[in-house]
Image (cartoon, rainbow, N blue to C red; front, side):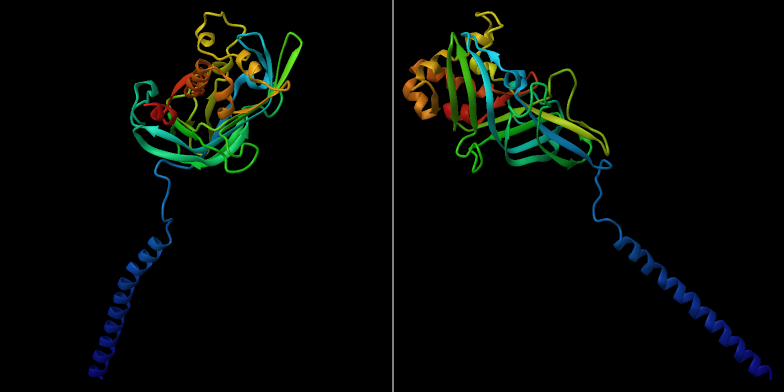
Length: 291
């Protein structure tokens, strides 16, 4: 009887040991299962937000303006083809006029290629939304984009197409100007009433490519000796290049119809078109070709 009790007690102890051992071996399996179900990657700086990339031709495009030589210009369309637009959060503020490239700690692709119409909408319309993308929070303080020849759409074969009318002293000249000189801009911080590019977790921020077409035509409201006018082409040379009362021209046509000096003035203006608000940009493609 005593032997049976010992045997029974031994079985109880053995069973307890087995159960204890099983509970020990199951714990790592449970932990492994939890690790395997975790997200593969999380945004390192918090919840993602949305970055909008916008284009702005300013009031000159939306409302019309008077050129340095007295032509009232109104645009029906200004098609601009964007490619490879990128936003940068840099280690140090980027100064486009100082040269070099942005030293980025993170970048986001804003658009691969898209054509937009800067003249779309009424006089008080918002700037043009080119694209919006999910993006990690950050202080995006540099921007680059290219203006390549469009592969399709209203600007096919060109990087800018400008359509509208110019009127002076009772003469109206409809124009359709098509430019195929590709450009590339690298810019620092937006300069304006408010900083742009500051993206908080879960919120929306904007970056803007701004185009200063008064650099091309000048500004009738500014003094003739103002820098905006001394370097501008104006519209008189373009009006003289018109045939049959209208101007339908690409760069090859303008090279033939403008004087050599006028054509060189036109080509010299292209690198100054791109801005970020009032902030200057560095143009790298046409400038490199000249050098």
